Image (cartoon, rainbow, N blue to C red; front, side, top):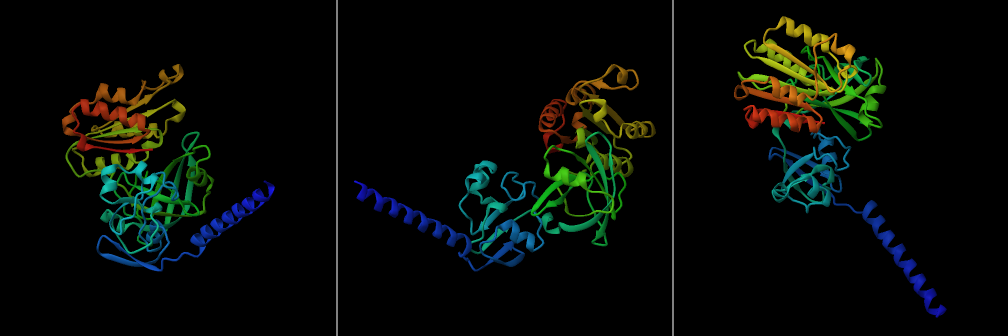
Length: 361
């Protein structure tokens, strides 16, 4: 019996070694040669086979959004493959709906280039640029939110953005995270962001660690969440640091569209989580078309006796005060639960769904 067991063990060991060698060969030796990467039928790049699509695009200065560092968990880097469509991976079948899978949509961070490929991406992504800047200021506005001012060194013509858009910041090797532009003054050589510190959060921890004079790299601007050129009343609903993109939207509306009403519904948990409160009170006093509705989930007696706040959830404040929904458009930024409940109230008040834009985080 022993005589049979020993050769069997040896053979199994040899099989394991051969399998390991094959996998190593596939990893380090396999070469697909060069591939042609065609973007939107107008740009052609020669790239190294075996490279992931997102990396190949990045190396050719096509900067797709990403919030997971290429781990296939955010879905932001989705593209439509029109030629050379690979089979979908399990992670793609989770993040991309069946209809889009059938139409060739894939995650660029999960697509390894093995042959020529053609893709379609939103045209505006081809104009995304890389920026280099220096921290000019970094100050706490609440116990866990920092307002960071950045001077743009490169490119020299600075940043042009639409109110409500966001930037992707390099926060580690191959890692980027997105943060909304919070600038209330439009200067092409300066930009502000507001960052809430998340425990063990890669992006927020990195940006909170930077001091005045530190350099950083970012890309943008990104996003379809921006102020529309219409005559509708502007409804802004923000939760916590979701206030950041609302500020440029509000200030641009008041400056550029003096006949449009603007309402800000801002919800936080406690008074300590509230920021820019005095600024909005002054804005309301000076602009008859601006109306401010701060809401605290927890309202302490000392705070209630000093300020006029609504206690509860911001979606309920919205429901109690919004009128002329059919003549309004809405911009929402904050936690998913807040956004979902607020959308329900907006629709019930007559705001057409096509005029409700939101940014969940």
